[in-house]
Image 1 (cartoon, helix red, strand yellow):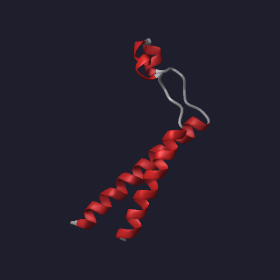
Image 2 (tube, one colour):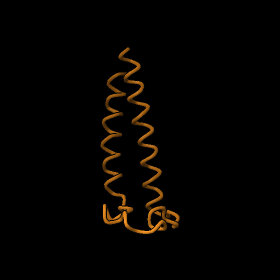
Image 3 (spheres, helix red, strand yellow):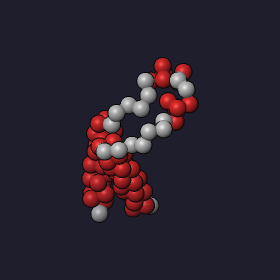
Image 4 (tube, one colour):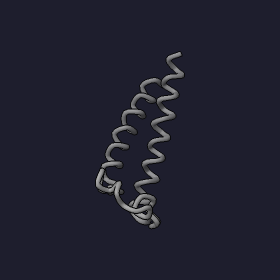
Length: 76
């Protein structure tokens, strides 16, 4: 069980890194801080591939978090 959870945590962390790197940047870095409220909060709805990448990131984050919690619980 420990090996399975450790493998799941490693694979999910690598996949999170890949999925986050595939997402487009939402701001222009520090230069984006001088923009208006519309740029800061964004009024456009996310569609298509961006929506899928966001949802995949959330699911992978939950899988990673739960696997780490289970690993910690097994060590006790």
